Structures are given as C-alpha cells and as structure tokens.
Length: 340
Ligand SMILES: Cc1ncc(C[n+]2csc(CCOP(=O)(O)OP(=O)(O)O)c2C)c(N)n1
Image (cartoon, rainbow, N blue to C red):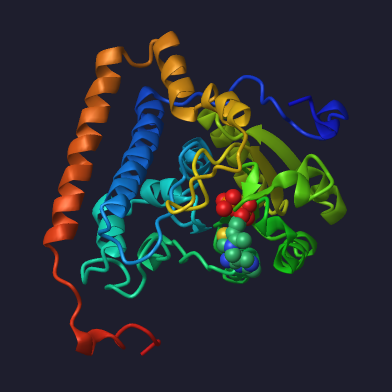
C-alpha cells in the first residue's frame, strides 16, 4: 500500500487536510445516522437473501458507506444523482426510505418498481434520482446529459454519478466525461476504486495506479480522497459541486475504498487475500467516524447507541411493511413499463 505516484507528484489531494468547512452538530450526526442506516439496511438485505426470500441477487456496499453518504450529503435538493449498486447510501440521503428498498427486493407492489425489478435498480424522479443503469458506464453520458439540460434551462443544478474501477474501462466513461469536460458542464464523477470488479483486481483493470491521473487527459481537475473518511468525501465533493455550479466544469474524484464483501451476496469473495481484508477492516468507515465523533466530543457513546437503536427499529418496521405488502397482480405487469 505504498504512496502512489500521483500523490507523490502532488497532482491530487490524497489526504485532504483539515475540513475546510465547519459542519454543525446536527449535520455531523446526520452523516453518522445515514452511514448506520446504510449498513443496517445492507445487513438486513443480506439476511433476507440468505433466508431465500428474494427472487434475484442482492447487492450491498459494506465498507463504502462513507463514499456514498458523504458525497450525496454535499448536494442540494435540485441536483441530480445517478446511483449504481454500491450507492444505496446516497439514495437514503436523498430521502428514499428503507421500506422502499425492502419492498422492491421482495418484489412487492409497494416497491418503487411495483415488483418489476428484484433488487436496487430503481430511481425516483421526484427526488432527482435516476435509476441505476445495469450497463456499466452508461450513467456517465446520461448524467452529463442532465447537466447539459441544467445549462440550457439556466438552472443552477449539478449532476453527479459514481463509477467503479471496472466500469471505468468502458467506452462510455471516455465519451461521457470528455463531453462534459469540453462543454464545461456542471457534472461530478466519483470513481470508487474499491479494489475489485467482481473477482478482477484493479491492477488488471488499469496500469495506472491512480485512476485520477486520467483527469489531466480531459483537462479537468482530479482529486483523490480517502473514500472511507466521510468528512473528507463530503469536503472534496462540496468543492467539486461548487466549481460545477460556478460554471467551472466537471471534476473527477477518485475515492480509495474497499468492497468488504463479494460482488453480490452469492459471492463469498474467497479470491480476496485475507491480509487485504484485514488491512481495510482497520479502516472501517463507520468505526473510524465513531472514533472521530467521540474524540471531538460531538457525540457520546450513549448517543451513538441511541442512533443505532433508532435505526434498528426503522429497519424492523421497513421489513414488516415490505413483508405485509401485497404482490402485484398479473394484469399490472405491463403498467409503468412504457411512458404513457
Ligand atoms: C458493460 C457491462 N459489462 C459487464 C457488466 C457485468 N458487471 C456488473 S457489475 C460488474 C463489476 C463492476 O465492477 P466495478 O465497476 O469495479 O464496480 P463495483 O462492483 O466494484 O462497485 C460487472 C462486470 C455490466 N453490468 N455492464
């Protein structure tokens, strides 16, 4: 885990220094709440999957909560996001309640896709959330297009999406980012370098150690951030979003993080060396943030416990709602498939 070439050359900001903006106690607490909610929802998804209650796969983001939550928290209401399978934390920050996730996973009528998708591929246009597009990379041109629409309509909003290290090898990454760059669109791309694309290690995806060096090739700013540090992610995203809003164009942010589970729940990740898991376990984003909150006396141990217990109750209620919800009727199968 040597210091990267890019960091040595100072191209990037591997260790964001002090948090440049002061967050209030309420905001710092909310960041904690959303990370706990993200993990508790994931744990419940994992457990329901193991009980055989889902018809499809289950995708969780253990270890990557800080990247999703910190970046989404830096946005304003009118901004658009294009989440992928590791970004349920961002979707929660935008206000989608956990019961919608569980109802969707269970194929219920009350889920956002009314039983049509069996996991997390749903959007919510009321909350400016595009649905994840399964074909990796596609959300980059889609979100660049949303950013262009904001420009044309003179709306002061930003579009943000995430891509994995594997997805960054897809042609759409280049086309979308280059388009956003030359058009100086209000667009932010967060590349979550989480070590693996399914079972393929990042070293087999790219010969550059730091994906962020690609930013130079597009003529845009690039920054590296510790993706397991929620405050650093918030800070770097906030700056990128402010640049975008001022008309200074897109930023590529590389968040160094780790996928602490397999690609999906069916994958035991036995191909990941134990020492790598141990290395990242010590950098768990939630445990680290708890240490920060206690050290800075933002919250006491009992406050953390209270938040965890509130979240546990919320997840129990979400499961009850989802399990008690009806399945869709056969005659509803074609409803909502095409625009009417
Ligand atoms: C164009 C395309 N190729 C292959 C796949 C199958 N696939 C889905 S997720 C995935 C791995 C993605 O890895 P990465 O982009 O690093 O994201 P991570 O899962 O690590 O978050 C693959 C190969 C796909 N969905 N789209």
